[in-house]
Image (tube, rainbow, N blue to C red):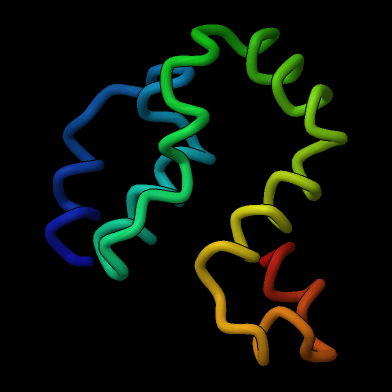
Length: 88
C-alpha cells in the first residue's frame, strides 16, 4: 500500500491511465491483488471521455457499486453503511 502511494506520487495525472478513479483502483489492487479498474483502463483519454464512460454505466455511483460487488464480501456489500463506504 505504501509503495503504491509513493509510486503514484511520482506519476503524472493521465486521464484513463493515472487519474483519481484509477488511482483508487490501483490502491485496491495493491492491497487485494485484484484490479477493479482493469476493464476501464484505456477506454478514455480526456475528461469528456471519462464523463461519457461514467454516463454509459449510469453514473460514477453505479460504477462504484459494480466494483464493490467484485471486491467486497457479501456482508459488507449489504450492510447498512454500504452507501457511506461507496461514497467515502
